Amino acid sequence: MVDEDSHIFSDLALSRRLEKAEAQGNLEFVETRARAFPDSGARWLKVAGAYAMFDGAESPLTQTFGLGLFETAVSADLERIEEFFRECGAPVYHEVSPLADAALLPLLNERGYQPFEFTSVMFRTLRPGVYLAGQRNEGISVRLVNVDEHELWAQTAARGWSELTELSVFMHELSLVSAKREDALSFLAVLDGLPIATGALSICEGVALLAGASTIPEGRRQGAQLALLDARLRYAAERGCDIAMMCAQPGSASQRNAERQGFLIAYTRIKWRLP
Image (cartoon, rainbow, N blue to C red; front, side, top):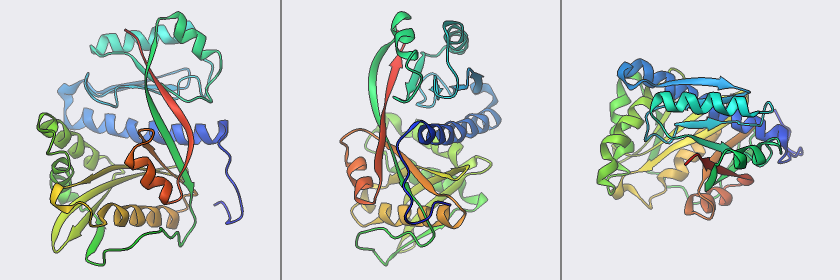
């Protein structure tokens, strides 16, 4: 546990911790998908310290995590990863930390990869008794869902995306798989007896990964996500986590809200694709 006066620098060691936590959480998701939906073909492969994951051709988890961060990747490694995605019938994506081995960028350029997306990777330190700024809505309660409430959690999460009707089935299935993960920590916010928002938590070697934030349209602007964030951070700190992490689109409302709660931008990842 990091003490109150300590400082964590945004360096290679931190990037390795954060990227490993996200990779581990997504690996558990892919394995859960494979068990719940055997016909999905969901699987993963580890090459040169990087995790290549297939969760369906359209899934945001179908990409690599940690490429060039834990081991130096050479052309033969990329060929193996590319063949893995080709066999799965999926595009080839790598999301790369700026702290990865400098030799990776010219290698990606040589193989024709193109950068197309940025992600802010954010973190904050944790300790027991963590306190978040902001006005609390005392009418909102937050709890972990039970094993018989996976469908309830998934439906609530999917309703948060109901404006995007073309994604409704996809988001419901994604949320249901997330809730069914073996070590899933799925939090539900309830107002006046009605579920209004969701949040998920994964823990890996002292890092608390926050994801799964969704609020139904009629439940917004009432403090549900602040309550969920507070509950998850407290839960993680009580279990020995010294860092919390989350990812956001650069400059987004999600990033600003996280910064208001003490999160710092550790670095900005670049996502690469092979045309």
